[in-house]
Image (tube, rainbow, N blue to C red; front, side):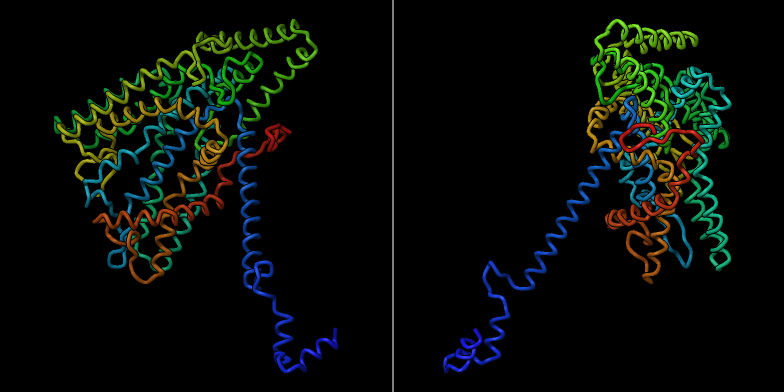
Length: 544
């Protein structure tokens, strides 16, 4: 081989020695032997594809584990309504609240003040009525369940208040430090006041919600028409008889009591908890599991694992009692065990005098998989009445009674539908509640898919964190934007034209990223404390 190479180099028509060596080393330009740069690109593509496949598998595994850990009696439709309420509040604040820089200070602006033609957008972003509807439904169901278990009112209320206000302590502590640091650094008091007010102003919801939760035993059976009549009377005195302005603050309680009482009424017409995974017609072996998980309270941000421990684990223990008997073919023994469990549940229900719950225990009702169980007709009929009646009343009040079209507060407006709530806000909330009741069945069917259910479950697990820190996320992005040295469109500029709205939409991913960072830092305050001996659910949904 060496002689042949030397002979080739010495021949007249052979290329120079360096060219020969270069040709021998350099790969040929054939498809079978690509250039080095192509090899690197192909290798990077393959590595990226493998990494993408790995991430996709991880996401699928997370979705599967979330679905497996969800209790069978969990009403996914209610969780979806809560997630819609959270999304509406967050987007509403991010889109209609602007922190405008003016001569070295900050002030709050609103695009609805300069562009009132966009007021109909507030009809989609004002979702507080859905919050109170779900809250009333959950609180009434929770209180009934607590009475069944022999839990006192004081213990029940203390548990709910702890879940509600534990995450608030972190917000107050952080912003106390931030406000003091800004004042010490020379920031203007007006700027600090604007920022602190933007963060703490949404907390009014928690105070009102806590007051209504405390009064749940008194208002659980109150007809929603009574607080609605109070709202109408207060507005008549304020606007029709030129009464004092302070009387309008009575509507802070009465106005939000309307959807709260409506939610309690809904709970009375839905005696059995919906099972999103299995229709009612598939036998009675899962009946006891659903009955025992019935009435488990859910709160914005409450951990799904606690419900799993008390509901789904009990359902599996009941099934283990009847399962071996059936596997041995002893149907008589299985029926005996099942009858004993049914009799036990029925006696507990009769002790409360709630006859509607007896039908739930025995599995009666006209449920066809939508979960209404005897109250399904009430749900559809009430939904349409509330939607159509509330919409018509709101339109009449806006067009002929002088109420503002915007359902959120607008700085500088003479009348606000939210501070305090007006009759137009109450009727609009009724329309929203009607739409929620009508959408409940379709939401339950769609959420049977694990991929659809996973983001809803994650949003509910972080509901309080999202609610408490979304304004902080917006403020953090706004403050970082000041490092650019000039006002950024949609972030620091006056919201006075449609271009501001387009620029604001472009900032939403940055707000969401900052909110995810806040969630990672402060979500631990939302988790309930572990108690000794408390079972911990495994990813497969089993209690260990």
